[in-house]
Length: 352
Image (cartoon, rainbow, N blue to C red; front, side):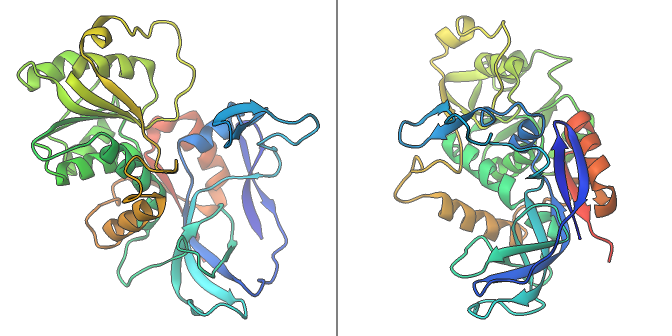
């Protein structure tokens, strides 16, 4: 049996593992489809995450140095890659009553041939309805962060909305903003193919930030007013500068990206000083939710799963390229790390 592992920074490989029988509370899934995470996981894969030498202390709500002698947050050679899996249940623990042999399910899990998960009171072990698309299922995670970003941006009917960065989260945010009733939805990305997909799925117009002044174009498009909401998923410093220029007075910039340190040049003078913009850092996984107690992570997850399974969201265009499990190590390095412009969210198909 094989699994996908980061054996060293920026190097992935399929390594062997020994399968085991399930515990009474577990089920074993024989994986048919999988997908990695293209955001925070890539930072981990490159060894650039703050979790290497630090740990986020929940009590202090800040990063603090790890205790001397403790293992780093990422241990290369053991760090398994992957985010979502879809497959059939092939083994059931004696205490499991909610699932049956042969059922197709989706859950969080690494890219490997079999995944064993807790199956008692686990709302993240999702049964796939008949006819549901696996491409939608493996977008369960990015859909949550897209929904969180749209909600934190307070998108309302009639609004002017800009989505910056048209990866999986941005593509889903485009659809959610349009379906929420935004009158103008603008996509921003330098990659033509990503813009084409966004235009097919709700964007009214797309701008290439390398060939135009995005902030100025947004102001022209909105009769000089600017965007009510800008959802920033790219983590690029120039993108945030453009957002500060293109935001309407008092508008909201919902910052979804897990940003890296900005280089010199980001200027919080200029338009930022005059536009009274509100920058909120949107993260579906942070509790309590800004709309607690009505909303929490579980409600976000339930909502996203419903929208994905009933076809309200379309993620078939987002899953590309689709590679085989046997080539997943080389494909991960190529499409996720080295040349992310060649993919949106890579899908993995297991040939049985």
